[in-house]
Amino acid sequence: MAAALPGVKAETAPRKRCTLRAAWALRKGTQGTSCLVLVAQLPPSLAQTPLSCAVPRGDVQLTVQVMRRAGMGGLFEAFLKLKAKLAKEGLFEADRKRPIPTHPRAIGIVTSPQAAALKDVLSTLSRRAPHIPIVIYPTLVQGPEAPLNIIAALENANREAAVDVIVLVRGGGSIEDLWAFNHEQLAYAIAESTLPIVSGVGHETDTTIADFVADLRAPTPTGAAEMAAPRRDQLLADLASFKQGMTQAAQRRLEREAQTLDQFALRLNHAMPNPERMREQIQNLRQRLGQSWLVRTQYWQRHQQHLAAQLEALSPQRTLERGYAVILQQGAGAVRKPDQLLAQHDYRIQLAEGSAEVTLAKVKP
Image (cartoon, rainbow, N blue to C red):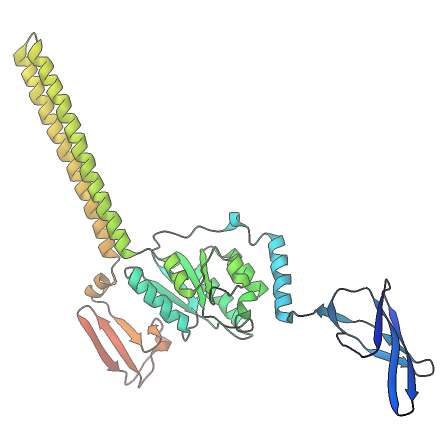
């Protein structure tokens, strides 16, 4: 009980129960109240207590039933209790974190299709890695049904195994808005996921249980997208650097072999019992060196072409050029299921050589 009474003196006593005894004094023209309070030795807290009063003796008895820390909300206290429990179980340990793939084949996004964070994530991924396919697993991110929705989306992503990494994102908000990400069962679902998870929930100052359990925590949804996807221009730069390194290594090897050949020729010129045979050996060495250099050069060229072909095959444009098309719904991204097609709704069809706006007259399942 947190209250201030004028004229009340409090004395702490090491008791489990306590009795409040008040002596009332009324004087003519004024009213005065005085009482002596014996309080059980308890930490600073707020308590809910029923009162019982014995009128003849003036005794007031309080029985403490519920206590909570003063100055801290119930949600935050529940957050701290769950955090301590999961930490004790080892869910936050670094050795159980899964590594984030540096070159994912596909990236899964678990969030609400209407979330503003989704637009930020898609914009970041299209800028950094337009060649990587994206799979969206829609879910609620706020409300009492949100935790089970998020768990179902994570289980669906793990079951399909169509992506190499999952990005779990939501925009910022109050502790009530983000409470779905402090659910105990969701924490276990994240820990049991076979796919690595990057958490980007709220702003940089927001912290949830999901952030602690996830394999990697980003300060914002945009930061989560940056951590999950490599930069395409950096990949191309690495490829160019690899090509330059192979060329320089081949040149150095050729120079060393040429120097070795010159040394052999010099030794042959100085002392050889059969110069004709030595010249034939030199010619053979030249041919072998040339063939070796040709084979190595062809191998490096094939390897470089293979890497370039792999990078080209990952481009969504190549898929469109093979005759495929992408149906885009306004504000919801790509249409992936037949039940997303609605009659009398406008859609945009993305083809290899452009796009067109269409209106579906009738949809047959």
